Structures are given as C-alpha cells and as structure tokens.
Amino acid sequence: MASYEGINELDVNLTGNSLRIGIVMSRFNRDICDSLLAACVHALAKYGVRRENTLLATVPGALEIPLAIRKMAMSGKFDAVVALGAVVRGDTYHFELVSNEMASGITRVQLDTGVPVANGVLTTDTDEQAHARTGSKGTEAAACAIEMANLLKTL
Image (cartoon, rainbow, N blue to C red; front, side, top):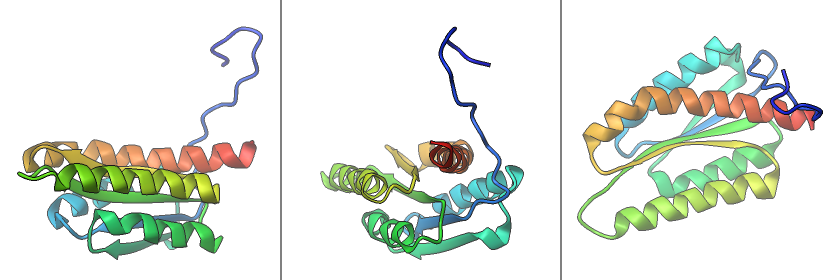
C-alpha cells in the first residue's frame, strides 16, 4: 500500500530465495562478531536465503573489511554483501580513525560497484553495549542486504 496518495511506491521485498549473499566478518572482537554472524545467518535463512548461496570470508580487523567486500562485490557472484564487525572505543583516537575509515570504505564500495553492502559493524563505547546489540544488528544487516538487492533488481 502506498504511503503517499497518487505516488507509485515500490513495496519492500524481503524474499531471499534466489539471492547470493557474501559476508565479510572481522575476527577482532571475535566473540562479538560470532554473535553478529549467528543473528545474521539466522535472519538470512528466515528470509529464504539458501546456505549454499552464502559465503563467509573473515578478515583480521575492521579496516580490512572494505577491501574484502570490494573484491566480493566486483566478482559478480553476489547480489549483496554484509559487513560484520565490532569496533569498541579504547583510550586513544584509534577508535575514531578505524570507525570512520571503515564506514567510508564500505560506502565507497557500494557506490563504486553498485552492489549493496549492509553495514553490520558495531561501533560502541563498551563490550557490554556491543553484546547487547549483536542480535538486532546482525538481523538488521541481513534484512538490509536482502531488501537492497531486491530493490536494485527492480529499479
């Protein structure tokens, strides 16, 4: 149903049956990332993405995520890619540097390649905040990847 009278609107499509999804996950803060991955994979399956149409690649840390997702996006093998990781604030400026450069890289990859990238990288002040958000963020990233892949196919 259209939200605005007289304007055509595309429906949100969360059907993942035919989609191929790549996942790039940081191994830094592994316990947090494993929880993000579990939630993401569960949501992908809920929306119909087949396990055999999903590929996971791990990288050392958040700064390496953009390069791996770029390679996946450029391969032509994936309809969307999900980035998973956790950057937890420390006592130095390093947190801002890693968070900003990683997010900028992810945005650049999707704009340069036309392949949607769902940013499921947490940036939090504490480990506790990160653990509290893993379920929702992993699920949201999966839904975002599916929705954007379907939207771009329609457009």
